[in-house]
Length: 219
Image 1 (tube, rainbow, N blue to C red):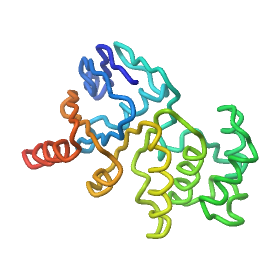
Image 2 (image 1 turned 90 degrees about the horizontal axis):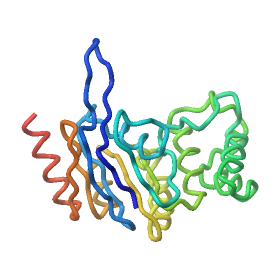
Image 3 (image 1 turned 90 degrees about the vertical axis):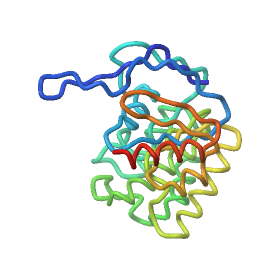
Image 4 (image 1 turned 120 degrees about the horizontal axis):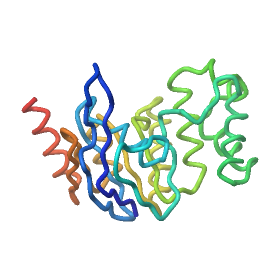
């Protein structure tokens, strides 16, 4: 369960307050895979970071009763001077999971070969996303936060990513950001639309997509 209580977030832009989330009160259902939709700059990543605890709200609070992943795709948890393998070991220790098992899972999943033991700073964006996504999928969270990552790689890797993600969310919740509506339809069964600081929940993901696309057309 994730509950927003009078949640607000604003930033100072050109000496003025820009409101990204405006007095949000909403309880997200447990066991759902939610697509988080909104135009560029609407605040989707900001909301994910607040849910993960990486960013403090300006006002209000977020109440949760389960474990939540970092926003997969942002790679904020990974140190650029450590190798991929070293980063995975570090994350395993933080989350209290078996280090060797997680390293082996990510090594196999990412399919980076010897580059798995190269410094993270030498990786391309796609390679970093493979490590980040694989590390999160190797840990059993109650809720997975995914930010524009399932489209990484070739068709074979995308198929593998989809399979492992669907396996994890069969017994967990997820909140996914993607501009690819086919991915939202494939991975999600409900939706959240963020527009002008307001959030609307839709139990039918196709209804959420229709509302989002109508708002994009208006703009």
